[in-house]
Image 1: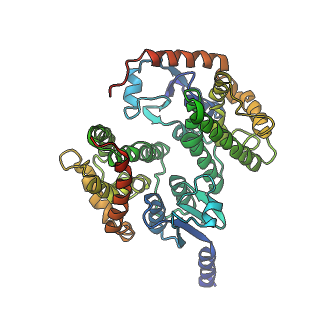
Image 2: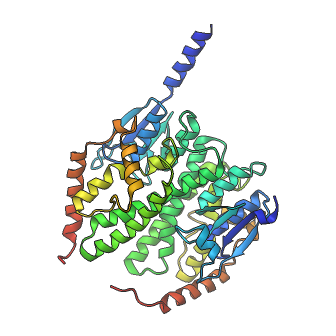
Image 3: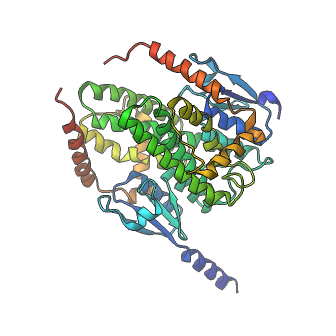
Length: 237
Length: 231
């Protein structure tokens, strides 16, 4: 009978084992949470304590010893952007990447730019002070300028719907303001980055995305502690 | 495909440019190679890669594609009649992408710093690189399944990502007087390196180590002649 065959197929899907190793705050792990949730995929979550990593995590990710790790039917997947592409290829609903190869190349380019340039340059602003911080702000804003221009005429980086690049830049929607508040520098304002600020609103409050934000007050406390460590190393200016 | 529909901006010495060339060769794509002059950037380069202003840039029709591994994947996705560069299996593709990212994010940056480093820092970098090669040896054993390449019978994504770095590895070994790829420690990789360099898609685009050494001396001299950074 058709319906019992369908029930069996659903049971088989649920029996697939999917485990996500994450921390409460990791922006990289959050990308994977979003991708799985947007596609409506069931999975188990294992929260790691970074100061006391589980032996399983170290077994699955011996090279980097980091989250996220996604384990699918016993096979580990590492590196958040690699994991996102795997998820997109394996579960076809709610696609994160476009079909067209040149559009896919563009998406991969911007996701990489985010991790290779934008994130480190913003982190630099966070950990530096005085003149060094001023110079770091210039670089970070240059990088953000490229990102801003990518949003011209679009609601999301992916167009009308959220895609890989949106998930890759997702940390801008919550973590950036935390870093700005803690270190006292403002990186994005309405004058220079109107599109980015609009994107932040659209992304932060999007269905599914808005369910998973880590608590802001906890993030402030965490990054205040980081900031103290970095700025106490600096000589007073 | 008409030759002038596919252009590649690059320089002969760049391992990243090499990745694009190998991939185009694997797919038997005719392309025009536009060699950039070292020390100056052409208008075309600045226009087609305004973000990084770097080679390689693949220009297909009028679309520029930047970043070597992005270009390799693009080539694989567009020219589907040629041999595949990435595996058809999703998990294997994830493994391939992982190792390519490892090479670019961790291994190669450590290796290129060896020549400029001294003392304890230098030894740490050498240790990191040698450790990385041990990991790659293990990966090679696993994924090659007794065949010549990481990709099996033919060159695949990891082969391209790693093999393109062999030229500069050899420069570091010769100029830095350090053994990195060791038959005793990584016999699989040593054999693989020979197979890779002999492959038809690679041979014509792999620069000679001596030429790379000359080039690197030229670059170091240029850097020394540059004005000192402001404080």
